[in-house]
Length: 403
Image (cartoon, rainbow, N blue to C red; front, side, top):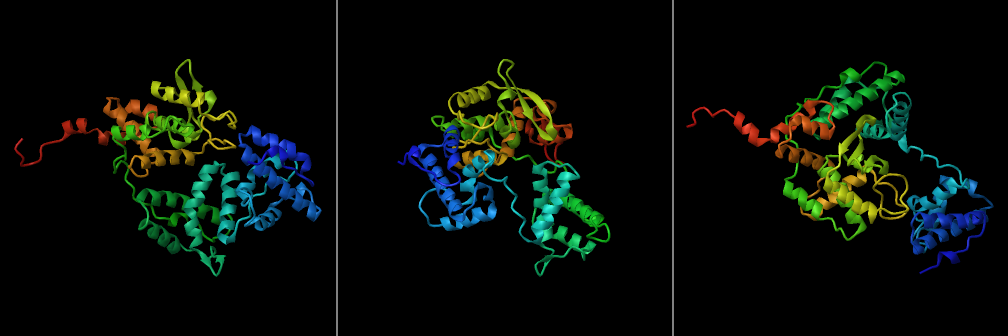
C-alpha cells in the first residue's frame, strides 16, 4: 500500500498539495485512495509545468486532453471527468483553478433544449428538478424535427404536433401522454414567443384521456414489505442506513425526495416528531413511529459517516460521503426488493403500501391524507378502492343470483 505522505507534487500545484491531502483525509478517503488522488495531482501538475501553464488554465479542453493521455496509464483514478472531480473540487474551492463551466450543448436539439431550460429557469422560476422533467418530455419531439442535421421548427404545423402526440399515445401510458401534452404546450408557447413559429400552436395539442381513479394503487402485501425490511443486513453500515430509509418510505409514506432531503435538524427527539420537506416547499410535522426512530438511532449512532457533508441524515457510504439523492433512495428500494425476489419495487409503491397498511388497520381516508400530506381528499380517494371489506357491504346482489 502506498503511503500518501510519500507522494511528492512538484510544479504549479505543489503549494496546494498538503491542503489537498488534508481535504481527502477529512472527507473520509482511505490511505490507498488518498495516495492515488495525490499521484493524480502530481501528474497533472507536471503536465501544467511542461506546458508552462498554471492551475488557472485548468478548463475543460485541457482536462480532456490530459484524460486522453491517461488512457491505459497505471493508477485507479483520473481516467474520466468523474475521477477528476475530487481534485478539481478542491482546487476550485482553493481558488487555484477557474470555476467549472457547464459543458456546451452538443447538437441543435440540445442547444434548443438549453435555451428553453434557460427560459423556464429565468422567466418562469421553475425548480431544477421540474426543468429536468419538462425538457426530458419534449426532447423526443425536438429530435423528430431534425432535418439534415438542423432542427426544423419554423415549418412546424398543427398536423405535425397532433401526429407526434398520437404516436406517443401508442407507446406510453395515458398519464405519460398527458404530461407530455402539458410540456409540449409550454414549449410551443415559448417558440411562438421567441418568433420561431409564426402562429401559436399550443392549442393544436390534443387532450389525452386519463380518467382519475380508474386504476388501483400498486402496493405490496404487508408480509412482502416486511421481507424487504428484513433483507437489510444490520451488521453493515449500508444495511442500517437502508433499513432506516425503507422504514420512512413503507411506514410513514415519505416520497423518495422527502427521505433524501431529511435533515438532522428535522428530527425532534423530545417531541417524537419529524419535519417533512414536501412538495411546493411545504414543511409539515409528523409523529415519528417507534420502529422508525429506533432505525434512525441505529444508523446515526453507528453508521452515518463522521465526514458526511451537509446536514442531511442519509449519506453515501463511500468518500466523499455526499448526501443521498432522490434517485439513490429509489435504488435502495429497488435493490432491497430484488434481494427478496419481488422484482424492482420503487419508492412510490412503498408509499402506496404505507397507505393501504393504514387503511387495513382502520384509519380513515382523512387520516391517511394527513399522513401522506395530500392537499385534496380526492387524491386520497383512490385508496378506497382497495378497502375490499367496506366495499363488499356496498355491493348489490347480481340479478338472477339466489341471494
